[in-house]
Image (tube, rainbow, N blue to C red; front, side, top):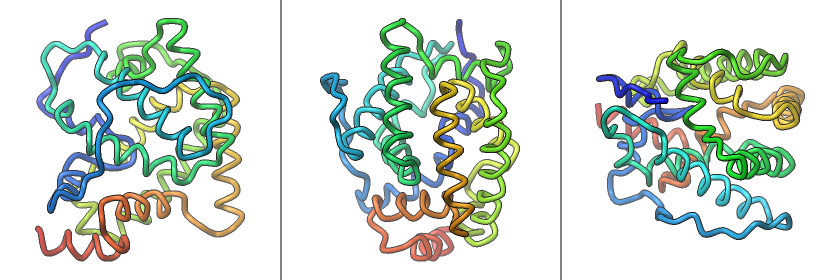
Length: 227
C-alpha cells in the first residue's frame, strides 16, 4: 500500500498538534534529544517513563517505514514529533501505556505497521479497523477539550489543524488500538471528567514544559509575539 504524499500532507502527521506549533517550540534549540535507533529490550517491568520511551521508539520506527510516493517533509521533524508524542501520553495512566505498548509489540511481531494503517484510514483508503463504542466517546470528549484549548490559546492554536482534521486523525489512530487499550483510555478520560479537569490541557502543559516554557500561558504569549 502506497500512501500518497499530498501538498498539504504535513497536517496529517501529528494527533494533538501541528508542525507549525512544534516548529515554534524549536526556537532557541529547546527540543529534547531524539533517539535514532529502536534499541529497547522487551521488558514488562518498565516504569511509566520507560514505557513511553519504548512506545515512541516503536512508533518512530513504524512511521519511518510508512510507504509514500515521495518523501514527506515531516520526516525531517522527528525530534518535534518525539516531543509531541511524549506529551500526549502525559494524560495516560501507566496501565493504558502498558496496554498500548503491547499493541505495538504485537503488531511488530506480526509484521503489521500501525502507522501505515492509520494514515490509510485517514485517507479513506481502507475500511474501518474497529467498531468499538469507546472510539466515538473518546473522540467527542477529546474534540470538546481541544476546542477549549483553541479558545484559551487562540494565537498558539491558530497555527494548528482545524477540528475536523483533528477528529479524523484521532479517530483513525484510535482504530489501530486494541479493545483493551480503548477501554483503558476511556477510563482515563472518565477520570478527567469526574475530576473536572481536561486531558488536553495536561497534554499541552506537558508539551510546553518539555519545550522549555514555564507554562502553557507563557507559550501562548510567545506565540502571540511570533505571529
